[in-house]
Image 1 (cartoon, rainbow, N blue to C red):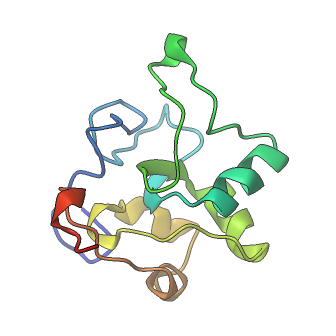
Image 2 (image 1 turned 135 degrees about the vertical axis):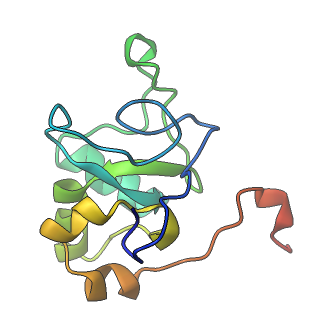
Length: 127
């Protein structure tokens, strides 16, 4: 389920995201980081993550991780997203693709402050 109480929608297939690399922010006991927030990463968010020791920009092929660019959708950890929020650089959140498990760590009203509706095909966005 997502944070809206509906079926969890996919976050991204390009790049392929998720703790299980299934395109969704699914989680389970082995996901100690709680990769449950579908974020649309920004340059500021990526820089912040690098500063706190979470390099999301560099490719790591051994983990099937391509490295992220601003605008990519990615299942980020609740803890690191929360730290970015506290530091004023949280990435926008796709609520329909954010796992309800995150509500144990991040209140819904905070997630809603960063809510963005992003079509699955970025070509649908008018320039």
